[in-house]
Length: 175
View 1 (tube, rainbow, N blue to C red):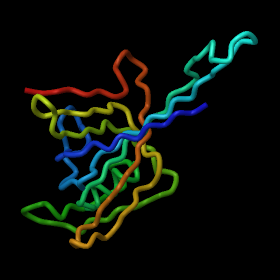
View 2 (view 1 turned 180 degrees about the horizontal axis):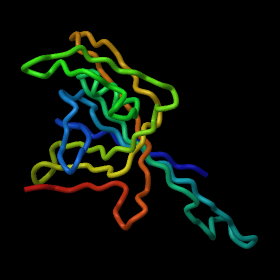
View 3 (view 1 turned 135 degrees about the vertical axis):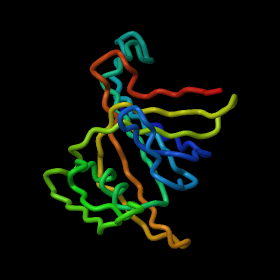
View 4 (view 1 turned 180 degrees about the vertical axis):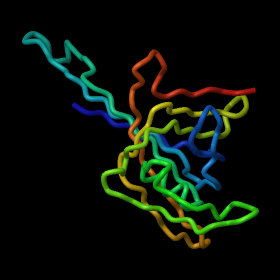
């Protein structure tokens, strides 16, 4: 028996990746910028003398996090596909000599990059932070040209259980 819960976290004002221990925001967020889905697969059994469940054990847990932003620049598209940094050349943001940006999408590279993704929003005591230290792209990004002329990018990541003692999903309230 599978139980799934989707949590849309409203009020998230920043999402992005952590690169080298530094937050790298993806840009302006959508109203539903962060969604966490958890599916629990249970094993249940009942005894011959009981009409109710006598044994209930968790067989597996799968989790995904979805990020939605209004900034579909090529760096976000690259990360949305889970491509290595080398898939992109050029830099339009270079203030001295901007160069044409080119993103090469090779099918074998899709989903090959592991990332630490995060979101920051409002909490009951101040800013609340959501961290997912190990993620890989689950599905290629969905890109939509919105009515406000922003190109919305939506990416779904599989949350990977870390091999060390770290939690795969962390929530912290900050001062």
